[in-house]
Figure 1 (cartoon, rainbow, N blue to C red):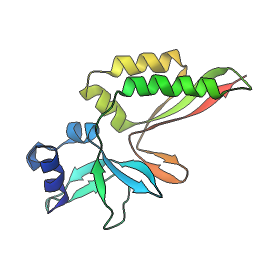
Figure 2: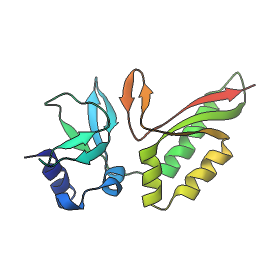
Figure 3: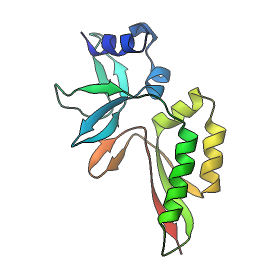
Length: 149
């Protein structure tokens, strides 16, 4: 079955209902060396195949992610980062936030909530089209560099 049909059926939708608002809230996951990474959809093609923002190998088994409480995850992440710092106080974070997360925040009306969390943690940065983590291109993530005195 073509990927777009399999994806839409798994979500209880038609191929015609697929679009950025669906993809941003239902990204695809792939396992690489036992770790799970997000592979976001870029477009549906005329043959009902899918184009992704990140490469995948042919024959790789994919799954669909379920949305979680992104705000709690962000707050927990910053809290854990502060707790792991033993040498300096956190002054600022240079943040790289995937544009697809911003789209998800827009779709779920949570932009003001995430902006508040970023402001409370002195996040400076911009939206990206994916990030690098241990040499692997990933999507729908927030990565950052912690700065302190």
